[in-house]
Length: 148
Image 1 (cartoon, helix red, strand yellow):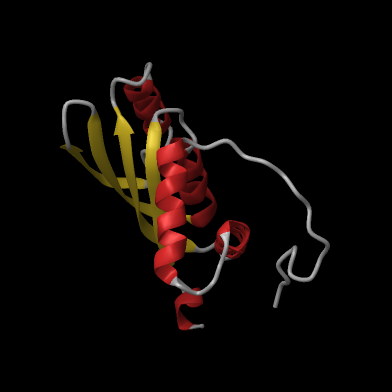
Image 2: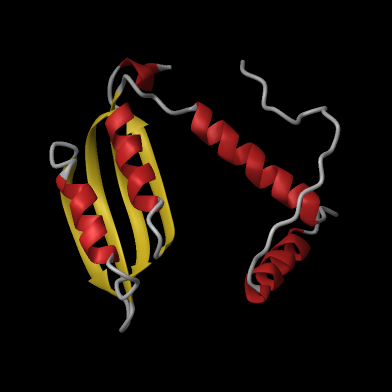
């Protein structure tokens, strides 16, 4: 089993800037959990979870999945950039659904299928675009790794 960095290491301090309302909501979530966690521990948990998720990527396996994105279609030329990236991955995109949530925000869901490396690469490119406010890729391998 791979070890996750930071499990028993010295602590390093860093600062981040976030909108006040986001920080307030995060603090409320920590408080609701009631496990005596503080902001630092909650952020460490998020970092660990992200590293574990990344370690579970299956680049050589055939995967199926869904990519969910929420974005502001008025943000710069985001719609063009989303289309441009998606056109480079037509073999992996099985289907798309686009929903207008309000005047600015859209929900887009992509059904994906293909080699893990390409599917994860597509998700990384789309979710990394400025203007995408939330997104999540959920994948399952379709070959022998399902039997593990």
